[in-house]
Figure 1 (tube, rainbow, N blue to C red):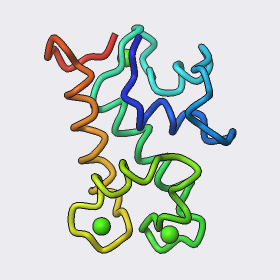
Figure 2: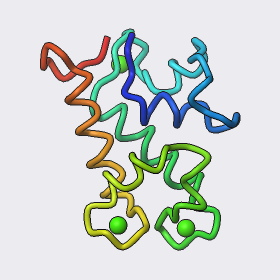
Figure 3: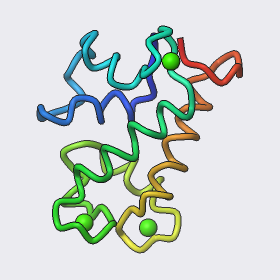
Figure 4: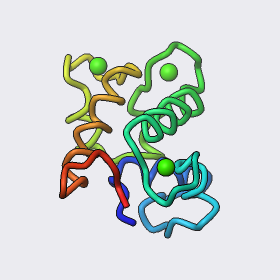
Length: 113
Ligand SMILES: [Ca+2]
Ligand SMILES: [Ca+2]
Ligand SMILES: [Ca+2]
């Protein structure tokens, strides 16, 4: 299974740096909620939603770079910040994750497996 980088990193929230982390079966099972071995967009959306909530330590519903840096790289942060206000709303993060999903979904069936 190949997961988009933004999600693979999000699953490794407990560890820094996240990108060196291999996904464990347990982490995969967090995203693959119905356990069918593939990750769908709704499943990924749920995971991104949870990660945003967890990382928003000051609870202002936006991720600042300081909050997001343990999880994503600056390039990803900038790409996802479509309105350029230097913070990520949940919608911006979800949109970024969905375009990552589409990029990773080579055969376009809406499932990553
Ligand atoms: Ca699934
Ligand atoms: Ca915040
Ligand atoms: Ca923004």
